[in-house]
Length: 160
Image 1 (cartoon, rainbow, N blue to C red):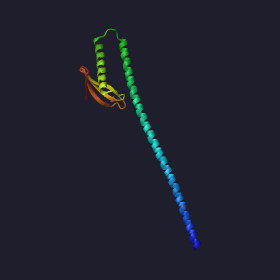
Image 2: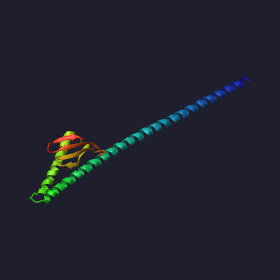
Image 3: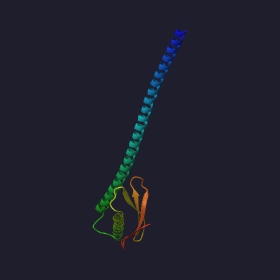
Image 4: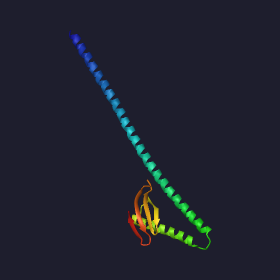
């Protein structure tokens, strides 16, 4: 009877040790899976953030390139107009250059009011006589940030 009891205790002790070993093994295995999942999630978040940053930077570059292209086209058309005209300056041509000068003056007054900022550009929305409506727009989103009313003759700039 004593041998039986000792044998049962030994078998139970062995089973308990094996069970603890198996539990330890699976706990470590699950922990390494969780670490891998966390590492993968962090890596995916970093990749997503980089993608968003790259996309934002690309969009800003595209807006900037489009602005530059528009400016280049307007400069080319101004040069073509100047080269194709004779020395005679008619009333119509004087009015056009006067209008362009007034627009440039209005934009420059708004730029002065707004301050130095490479993240925006300026558009002429409308004109009524010597009063121009100028918008300050974000290069990243093209959204209107502020609208100004500019009286070119009095050089008065007011935000709407």
